[in-house]
Length: 417
Image 1 (cartoon, rainbow, N blue to C red):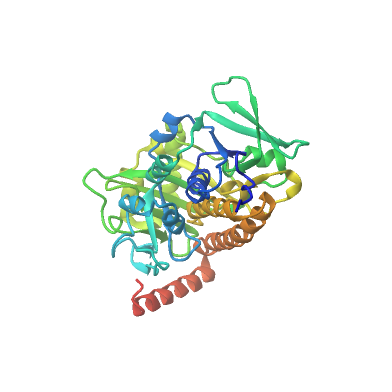
Image 2 (image 1 turned 90 degrees about the vertical axis):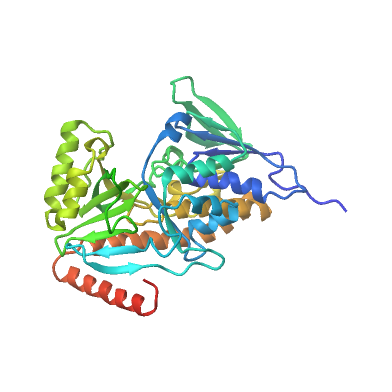
């Protein structure tokens, strides 16, 4: 008995962006593709050149595994969980709980959630470079490095025409495809072309961040923990996380009514020193350990400033053509969410699964939206709440702090801290 061919068999899929979402999609599509159907052609374009992408030290990030929305669930489904866990900075044993500290570094809260069914941990911290390298090794399709997808248009045939520009300044080219998967990040050029009014929004807070170096090893309590230090009602907080055994990334944050310009590293010596001076002044109440991390152990060359921005998720409009936005290109979240990588990994994996089991692109996208939009909206709401309460002052702060302390007692009582 013959079976109908898959609607994507022999078709051309373009993936714009080789970040977490795009790579997750590429790995998942090959892993989940039905063995009895001819596969599609997959072309991945990445604006960075390969050497720059692989050479970045970067920072650490969270991967969640407390429920089925987490990035660890996606990595398990991709067959990459064991390798990822081998790179974990924290979270693979009894250490690695998220901590909330007061201005004097006394502990307010410690959280270690129960893992989702079948997972060994509810969350880890991992260096971004190790996650990216693991995904890149798992991709079997060629990545065209140094080529950015800058716009796309729907053709009369129903296909998409993708305009690609090389980073070396060579002439722009155009590529036809039957499906365009957009994974080119929060500042997506394709989203700007197809959805020009769908832009990032300022989330109301600014982060100044850097990396502290400890040649003799990271001091306690950051050698086995990561978390947030609040300023006792002064409207300032500082996030800390190990990157490896000798480096800690820190990010001091505070609310500002309007966004300031972003400053990337490496900044000029004058600007970097000015940022560090501002951090030390704003966090003057956070104690000697804070001053050591920021003032003595941080190389000014790595300091940067980031106004937090995010964007609500959207459901897809079939009138735009066969195009799907995943990860930050659809629903950007600020660093306060702590969930951006997990959302990206789940988006890529879930879209691939829906495409392999649906009857058409429209059917797959509708089912994908039903999963992606609600979970991203929930994370966005949570991150905005963290900004509001974590930088609160006066009575609001003390109410929030009291609630956090109560939560800490309950978690200790139930054995979850």
